[in-house]
Length: 283
Image (tube, rainbow, N blue to C red; front, side):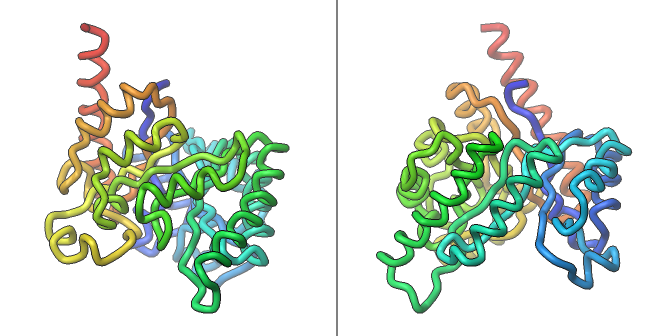
């Protein structure tokens, strides 16, 4: 496997469905890997089957049982937590690391979270460094990557993302690059992708519609989901070529808003990757 395609579970959120239903739907579409969202404690929507997040209070083997029923595996866990808040992020992310190890997910994803109004930038970096040092210590024990995503006030710029990724010296601290967030943040996603390639272990394949781009580019730091891959502003052929040239060996997790978009995204990315691989083989 070089470039694989996965599906972030956010695609089922628009239908108010459960994790179990989301996995079944992803498998029915043709995906083999998913990116679940995990949370602490109990909450009404997930308990009632109206939300796709999975509680880490439940046994990880329960998640694995659902996945196994549909022939699915986990490429990574969505474990976003405010890195500026160690009292929140450290217990949550270390628990997510142990959960990831139990379900066979090699990566957990996070970003720095929104900036607390009561912290200066200097204090934010100090807090983030403490959080990452504590979290990567556990990550190293379990062999799980902690992948930072471009999504908030520091990482919206590629230089900020790289700064955080080098804040702590750990072989498990890597990058999850989100093309859609980079675009909306005003970055060149292709140059950004090239810059982070040495630390890249995962990608969010997020496309942005022309309408959303026109309304929000340069005004936001990211967005939860995008449109179908191939129907927006991102040139996926260029993205795949960059990944191939850098020897990327991992998954592109589609982040879209509906099941129909998940279908279109899988078809488009499969075609793009297939053509790129054929061209490489024939070269």
